[in-house]
Image (cartoon, rainbow, N blue to C red):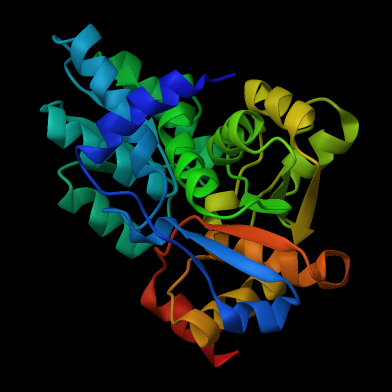
Length: 317
């Protein structure tokens, strides 16, 4: 696992590009959930999502260790790709990002705006990842994985901020994509707030991590078709699963309908725009409202990048 010294070194890299994000206890959310509810606002980063922290740390190391790199390539549904695009531009390394066909139009536009070459291929994230590996070999590019120690180290800085700033927490709910966010949260919990429970959240339509957690081993699924595209993963990462098995209290599955209700709740109670994965932690807390009554809870609002037509339909109910 990561040491406090590693996270503090990563924080220096992150804070050269952005300030710490806020964490607030929202009273209307407390009324809705029945508990003191803190929100870690990772929707307030330069890319509107927590992933930027990991990209900055990864690309800083690559710049130092591989100064002759022809470029990097990675697969994404959007936020990881924005992170790599922004961070690569900061260190002067070309970035190619592979996204699945039909990916978010606005996330695609953002990646291009950060300077990345965008390749649209494959029917989902896992298929896009296969294309990225093939293109890396053809073009001589360095593959940036979606799960890596540098990425975990970078995103762990949000948990460092949360545990340093918020009062003692009973539970933190964290959405799971490929696992960097929850692994970073577990690492910082172990160091700074060992009594706090960490709860992972996945979609009922992409339950691979929940199934794997229950089985104690990697259990892939055949599909991951959810509106919460940041959680749409079919194949869990074995290294991430090992950390989750050791450090998470449980994993909660939330439906697309529950995620949509949480997105509306965020808008009504805090006027925050959230993407599906960003609202998943609140959806899980709303599902577990009776169990968590009276406790002090934190939610990781991991991102706010959602296409306008989809968000409009969500708000319409």
